[in-house]
Image 1 (cartoon, one colour):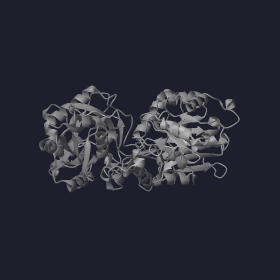
Image 2 (cartoon, rainbow, N blue to C red):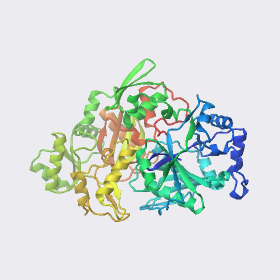
Image 3 (cartoon, rainbow, N blue to C red):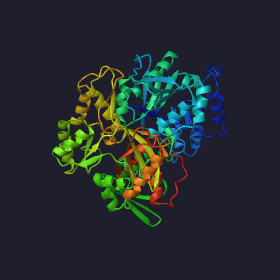
Image 4 (tube, rainbow, N blue to C red):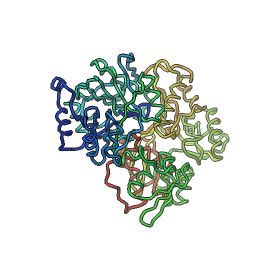
Length: 599
């Protein structure tokens, strides 16, 4: 029921308890509405797969409720909602329980007309197979949420009429891009208030489809209104202004309902404050800091803005700047930094590179363009896609691209453009630990928003999902890309129409990343490792252009000396990095994700 961003809400869990509370939970688990007793059930606990949901209004004795919360299992996230006197409940175990700093919002069906769900490019539907539950977990992990036990999700779907699961599925390829869970209080425990609640709303942050979260919310509300329920509740972090704004637009109003949780590692950010400097780290440094702290490695933040830290363990200290460490030599870093030198080194190692030349800013540059027909222009030094122009085909475009690149660095590289997908392979200590296809930013039309408005909305979503690291610039490059496709920024894009608004797939410019680790061709992994060895760099992101990640064709593009490990979750990039820095360290045996959102 908890929400941490406009397209996301979270929830609770359960453990095996032989007490009366658990027995009632199991008794209700397979109950149909007609089998429920006339009076409200007592001590109701609902297993959700990531934790238990404890309905406080069904507990007459706060000591029994406190004891039920104390029985939370390791790595679980239990939530007690609707406790009759939450302050009294916490007082029963003040060292273990706390009041969650969230607001509860309610959609009263009698007071609010539930708008028809609007879906463009996707469809909201119930679960159809157990594969959907795996996809739900993938979305949870992408959102930094606690994944659920698949067997519990599927068993609830099949047998528990009080739990409703919905997924949002892309119309073009069937990919699950969002999910929401609902609980029907009337069916669960014969709720005299005739209520319902929304939980674990999550939208894949890489999706470019607008309105997924709102559509999931409206669809669930429609289900409960049609069943005759009086309201639907959800919980949202008190400082999540974007989520609160969305829910208020949908007609939700705040109500005085509190949640109580147990003090555990997952909830720690809610009742304690980690060092402020650690909180200030960007996602690329924070994922490393969290993994280090999980292993008992001391983290000293030296420069939060730069992501620079000193990690200390067993008498050994290593300074890192995000995924760049002292173990990357200055020579290797200089080789990566100079794209022309990188090309030469990997080419000498037998790795295929596109035809190219160092710009001379004269007629010879134009002769090269005439020879190959389509080029990419980029400064020989730089990062985050700055100064790069893709798809240059005319002399006028070449002159503009050269000037743009020269603003970033005096030396400019011109390369033949090769069609294909941008494949990033993360190599750590001689092994590929993650592979992903990176795609340029795109928007999908709604039929009533301009392209400019769609870009701004998508940019806000990307920024929110990446801690401000990914945005779509509204600059000359974006404008020319849109114009080349036959549109202007102030045109209204037809509903369902997909439009690529950048040519480069760089994540800092709004690009999205799609994991292909499980299916990438082993030959491409061998190429990446070979390239890293040629450069002499232990941790790097090798970029290849490939027609198909499952095939063996490629051309080398460049190497990044500081790959963003957070972009490849749930692949264990941070774990592999810390393993490389501190081979003797061992993770604490807990199933929790420290960087997940508080609720």
